[in-house]
Length: 346
Image (cartoon, rainbow, N blue to C red):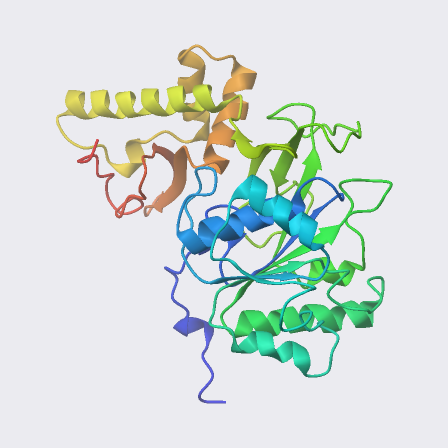
């Protein structure tokens, strides 16, 4: 027992580690669920393509690693369509008609362990239902499969598993609650009427372009920071990201925040101390003063925090704890939360 660590040994500076910033945490199990025909396979392949190439996924930074696509479901024609829409890449594909035979299912006794021998990377499993012959509504069966995904995680892999939804509800995934309990991050994919909202579009035409919500919904599990984005999927042409309608306002507020900091620094003749930065109430009043209604300011302050247009932190003194907001640029400030905010790069 003396070789086991205690909580005193934990490094408090360890932060969330993302394979795809704000969407796919590294070294974790992400369940991506959505109705059939929405483009789950296309989107998850595009994520893998961006990861293996080290390029951004619709503006989100990625970290490069090997990517393995275990396709237990799609015929060659679908794989060809994925390549047509998303382009080729060095994502390793093990599908139903591989020269090596079909990929081993996760309910086999030993064959599935070949995945443990892969160099650590991103393993995409398409789909949960097709990768085993067990009962997805059984506690015992799904605990076995999810535990095997955990073993891949223990070998250094990040795992994304595609999951279907029920026919009655596009936002209700199909299977036992053990799937959610033993996952780390649940990501939804469903049609919406317009970007910025989560009102479902219930029309059903597989050949028409679809506006999709991709991300975490409020009542769904995630061990990580939640985020969302909107994607236009045209089955005949392309996949593209749709700008959030609030983005211009968020950028405007962020710039005004920077201007305010610069003016305060100039007036005081020094950099602002952390305690001089606005708390939430003060920040909302500032935003209202910049021409936004009180309700809109409240919404934008919260949304900008989630999307990291501005940061939120606290500093403790002998008398009180001060919660404060600060503007952000493309990098995280090294000394925010200490004594002052470094504005030298502005």
